[in-house]
Each structure stands twice: as C-alpha cells, then as structure tokens.
View 1 (tube, rainbow, N blue to C red):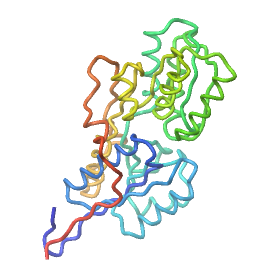
View 2 (view 1 turned 180 degrees about the vertical axis):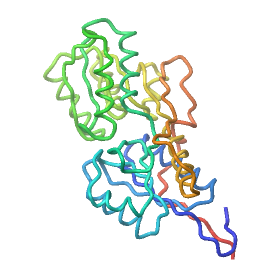
View 3 (view 1 turned 90 degrees about the vertical axis):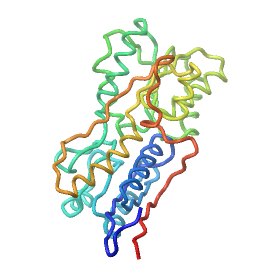
View 4 (view 1 turned 45 degrees about the vertical axis):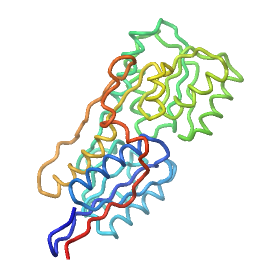
Length: 304
C-alpha cells in the first residue's frame, strides 16, 4: 500500500519475549498481515527469552528512538521495570498476550490466562478418574501467563482429582524441556498425565513414544506441533487463545487508540478448547501458515 504525497505512515513497534516457538510466531504473523492491510509501518523485536529483561528495556528505548507512535508490548515480566513504566507517559503502550500490573498500559489484548487454567481443570474433572498421578510442565516459573494459568487450574480442579507428582520448570527450549523430562522419568515412575505448555507438550509426545509409555498429554496452549499431536491423537486436549487473531487485534487497537477512540481494559479473542476429533478450530485465527517466517520490518512506500 502506498501513501499520499507527503503523508507519514503510522509507526507501530512490537516487542516479543521471544520467537522460539510457533505461539509468538503466530502473533507476529497476525501483526504483520494486519500492518500490511492497514498500510502502516511495523518494527518488531524479540528479547530472546523471559530472562532477558534488560534486552527488552533496551528494545523499548529503540522503539522510542525510531519514533514509534505506539508500542505493542509482549512483556517478559508482570511487574514493569521503572525505565519502561516511566516511558509509558510519552509512548502509548498496549500489552499483548502477557498481562502486566494494573494502571500501567492503556489496554491488554489477550485472554485471561487464569481462565485458560480453568478450562484445563474442567476438562480434567470430566475425563479423568480420581487420584490420577500428574506431572506439570509449564515452562519458565512465574513468567508469561504461567502463574495465572497454574492458579486457575488448581482453583478449579475437583478435590482429589489429581495427585501432583511434581512440577518441572525450565526455559521454553526443546533441549531443556527434554532434559527435564528425561531426568524425571529416569528417577520416578511415569505419571498417568502430563499437563504442559506447548513446547514441553511437544517434547512429552516424542519422549513418551521413545520410552513406550502410555501417559496422556494435555497442552495448555497451542502450537503447530501441538496441533499435529491433536490430529494424531497424541495430545488429548489443548487450549487456543487465537494468537494470530490477537496480533491482528493488537494492530487495530493501536490504530483506534491513535485515532482517539477509547479502548476497553481488555480486548479478548476468546478461548477455544480443542479436543479431537471434534472441530479443531479456525487455523487462520490461531496458527501462522506453515511456511511463515518471522518478519521484523513492515515498510510503506510513499508516492513520489
């Protein structure tokens, strides 16, 4: 899309915790396609992981230096560092996916991850016998939506439904999650159920098959690998919070804000509970296309 002569395109800056898995890649896909459709410039950065707060602070400053009209923040922490909090006064900022502390950002685009945990609990209550031995693998401890999801799960489980054998926390990398699971299986009896984030769920499917185990797997959120696991009957249930749609919604919300329209406290795309062989949801609302690769710059060419 081109601009009228002399017009300056709107500039949006997106900050992601990482682009290591297809969850955040799908958010990126939604932002990119909507930026192109709306004729705006988008610059994206990834921190490299939830442990890299200093990197995200520096990237937020790069957004300001670039002249971003608004920032779409996938925060690595719930409590915002002072350097970002102070900048919110001059740079309109919306939280994307990951909640941040109240009274900071203008609005949050995303589902309530407490409700994501509640959805898992409701499925477990309906489909598992009492005293089922379970292993939890939610990725990094207390980061992203994990702390809220875990609380929603525990608050809504029927008492006595699960025996929590252990909770394994670690970085969202295939190598680390594989090591965590294999070390656990080497020292303990196999659980009857693993409830995991997308990356550890993908790892669990492969490692359980390698060990010849019949442990059931539930994923708390969706990725391409989890989707394949659902289709193959290797993942029993997964949530989708429509992350590609969230990316599109975030761009639209920023443009509404810059146009002077009021935003609600939360813009929620809704949770889909995916259980094969039932309808597995609208792929184009949740996951990026299989051949999509991360896009860090969307530019608009003005008319000369």
